[in-house]
Image (cartoon, rainbow, N blue to C red; front, side):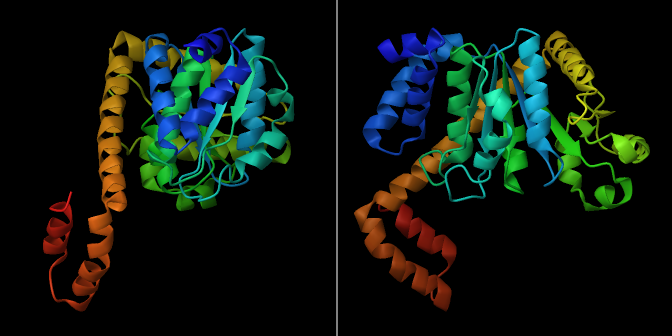
Length: 317
């Protein structure tokens, strides 16, 4: 209770300690973390959850820092979290990002946290969800969830945020060819960064290409995905992006989409946790550990079907 109260009072050390408990795979820490989350749950859900992804070299770190500093100037408190399900190492490239966000990380109303190690109970994405709740209870108004991996990370982040922003480079032809259609469909907005210097004309061209491409994708009932340009280097267009995000939030809340989206995300979170907990029980069961190698050999040799082998293992639970 003492840790939860300190966290709610804005104590950064209490927040960091609570996140460490959430990230731990020790059973006693898991119980402590869940007790803290239960206490804090009534004080969560009041932030703007923003997911950000982009190809390597697009300037995510620079953009997040400039955008974060702008939000601080508007009286907001900002937390930056990272998700990298593809990396088995704690932190991954976010440690470099944190160095590059040096100015933002020094601000008293900003909080930057690397992703936890993969393979812990609930997986990286679920740990990030719980960390997000802790940050909300600590009074952070905007929580930026950054993908530092590729592939599944975009989909996982999109499933835990209110708005998903995809950063692009100003090179229309190559970029449009290379981006996955699935990522385009996830995006609530596309942002062409580095729209400065010699790249200004190309950025405008890229913006037009994406606006055209988005017409062929399915649309939200109340929102048409936007395509905007900005320059993190020259600190230009940042205020317009926040204005767009506020317009989206107001429209989503007016249409009851905001609450429905979060409710759907919570249900999906529950389902994924059930799968992960069952997998953990399977892996820890001594009878299953003993029987599994032989069943895997039989399946590999074509002596039994994978379905029958799976049934045999589940019967041991």
